[in-house]
Each structure stands twice: as structure tokens, then as C-alpha cells.
Image 1: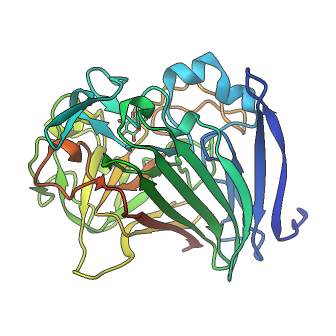
Image 2: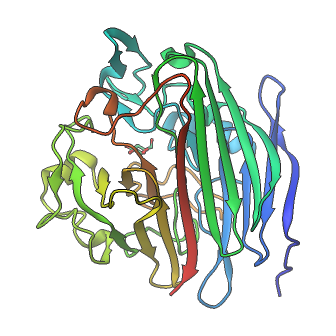
Length: 364
Ligand code: BGC
């Protein structure tokens, strides 16, 4: 029988950065024995253990056992952003450029011509301040980061705060907030890759996915939205009924070819005034694990792990092969700073940017 860990939050040293700064690892355990570890580097979720239909715990997120693996050149080069917090701007900005009140801003072009996930030194590579928080129901940590004025070319000093809570009903609640000293785009998100059969346990092609979206934002060949909001009807992007991820992924479809699979933003259905809406549901056929994603955001990026190629070895000692994990990143649409018809991502001084996402775990 496996030992049931005590509920609460504990901290230990995970390792040291080359410049000597310490990276901490926080371990959160809720009343049901659901367990998550988070490191201060990138606010990265390193592990997340949930029970299957028989009560067996498995770690369902991709990642590594040691800090060295996260710092290794092979990992930095592939940069799949396993489990990291993403900022200031999750997803892509065309040409790394945008205009605010007639002034042009240039941010790093770290993905071909485009800027991806906040630039070459995004929030995923920053050391966050972490402290445990008492929650009404559950256990939590709060992470804070100051992104200095001009950080990665972005205007204004941004104060970011992210709170992770493991609730007693087995949800991971993520509350984001940010303030700024000058108008700047903000699109924070979380970049965990899930495999509900357990990390390292094959690919996610037989996971059944449901997305609460009638439309998606088609992309050009550099994965920048064309501006069109396209209906999913009669396309492989229709996940309104539970469908295996692999059922249509290899169809002859220009959008699938451009993404090398699914790597697209879906436009979530939302009634005016809705706070958290159900965005996605994933069910794993063998383990019976179910994950539901709720969010206040207008969109969700569904990325089917197309760029994973088996060159990185995960916690279970298994290589992370093609499509061995999936990401469901709640966010505003990609390239919003250049798309006047998309919901705005601009945050101005005096405002507080707020976002809330819940990943809820259960079994069939
Ligand atoms: C993007 C992918 C990218 C991946 C890892 C995802 O959020 O949509 O295009 O390859 O992150 O960087």
C-alpha cells in the first residue's frame, strides 16, 4: 500500500541556478491525497498526481525529476515549456511587433519571425517568489514576479501574481492577476502537458476530447491567426461531441498541416455574464481519468504535442514521443495586439488584469 501523504504545503530546495540562486520546490497535498509539486523557476508544475478509476495515483503531467534536466541545453533548445507559467504574452505575436497609441513596440522574435510565449526570456525562465497560502477549501501557493519596465521589450513595469490552489474536490484552481505602470498587452497562461494515462505512458491520441467551441481561429503557415473566426462544423476541429484526438488528426486538411496536428485557438461559447465556463473535457480510456477545464478566458489553445519527438526523457524514464502529452492553455486569442476584431489584451495603469482557470480531476 502506498503511503498517504499528510495534507498541507511543504518546501525543499530543488537545486541551484548557474548564478547560484536557489530554486525551491513546493509540495501541495489536499485532503484526498492529490499531490502537486511546483518549482519557483517559471512557476513550473513539476508533477501532479491524481487517482484513476481504481484509486491508483499516477503523475499525469510531463516534466523532469531534477532541476538539471530543466536547465539542460537539449531541453532549452527544444523548449516545450513543460508545466511553466507563460508571460507576458502567451502564444504568438506576428513579427514580434505591435502598436499602442501610434508607438511601435518590438519584442523578441524567438519563433521564426514571430514572438512566442513572452520572448526568449519569458516568465517561464524567471524565478518567482513563492509562499504558501491558507485557503478556505484546499491548499495553495501564491507566486509573484516583477517584470521590469522594458522587460523583453514590453512597455511598463508589470506586477504579476498567480495563485495555485488544490481544492478538496480535486481541482487545480489558478487565479492570475496583474497590474502595470504603462499600457501593455498581457496574456498569462499555464503550459502543462497532460497525459491522463500517466506521463510517459504512450501518446494521447486515444484520449476523448470535448471542446465547448463552435469556432476556431485559423492560422497562416507561421501559426498566426488570419483574423477569420471559422465555424468548426464539418471540419476535424469539431470537438463538440467527445472525439478521440487521433480520429481525424492525419486528415488532409490545410489547418492540420500548418499546425502539424492540432495547434489552434478555439473560441469558447459563453453567455454574457458567464464567469467560469466549461471549456474542455478530456477522458482517458484505460485509466478512466477525466479532466475538465473551466475558464474566464475567451479562448483555449489546444496543442496536441506535435513537436515532441522522443528526444527528451521524462520522470518515468520513458522518452516523450510524438504527441505524448496535450496542452489546453486558457488565454486570449493569439496575436490579439495586431487584431482589432479580437478581444483586447491591453492592460492600462489603474486597472487590474484578472483571469481564472480551473482544471478539475475526476474519474469516469
Ligand atoms: C504552441 C505551440 C508550441 C508549444 C511549445 C504551444 O503553446 O501553441 O506551437 O510549439 O507551445 O512551445
